[in-house]
Image 1 (spheres, one colour):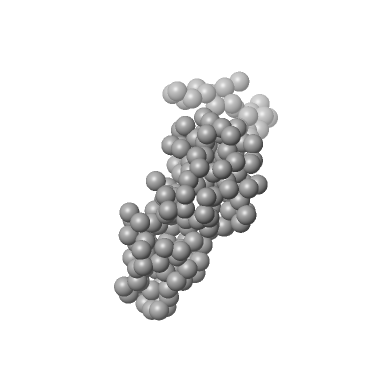
Image 2 (cartoon, rainbow, N blue to C red):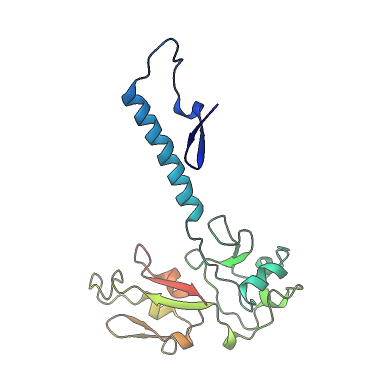
Amino acid sequence: MYLETGRRSWPVAEFNTTDMSEEPIDRKRFLKEWHLVLLRSFSAGVEMTKPKKDPLRPPGAVEDSLFTALCNLCGKCWEACPYGAIKQTGKGYSAPGFPVIIPEEGPCHLCDSPACSQVCDEGALKPVEKEKIKLGVAIVNTGTCLAYSKTIPDCDYCYDRCPLKDKAIFYNSGPVIKKECCAGCGICEYYCISNPKAVKVSPI
């Protein structure tokens, strides 16, 4: 049995009603449970439409829609990475199951002639030299950065550990990213001690 409400049919069972022949409906209880049904439906809709994370692909990755079409999830790239930086995306990402780098867990170390890009047989990853690696761009949130907020005025973990220091990242009262030179490796994000991270890498 269903209750029709506009475009949606609700199973009467969802209201947890008692036998009406034996006990009159408690109006307050009915309205409360009806409200809960609507709230659960709305929450489910929000979850379904919640934006998915954009993935940060390994070095040499082709354009993302082509990447997911070519990649067969063989696992060769994450097995080849000497640092274990390549993971499989979880359900929070736009394309679950595919290779991804999660800087907060383990950044790309910008290897010379990265092994991950050399072992892909499907063409999802193309061989690439270290100087041409471009995974994304680091973005600094000056509002939460410990250096800019003067919480730790001399904090320079991201700057000090960047493999492209004084080329992709500079320091002037806090980290400054030169986007065109940033490789998006995520080392800055990994070493950022702010919580939440004040520097995050955005995929290109």
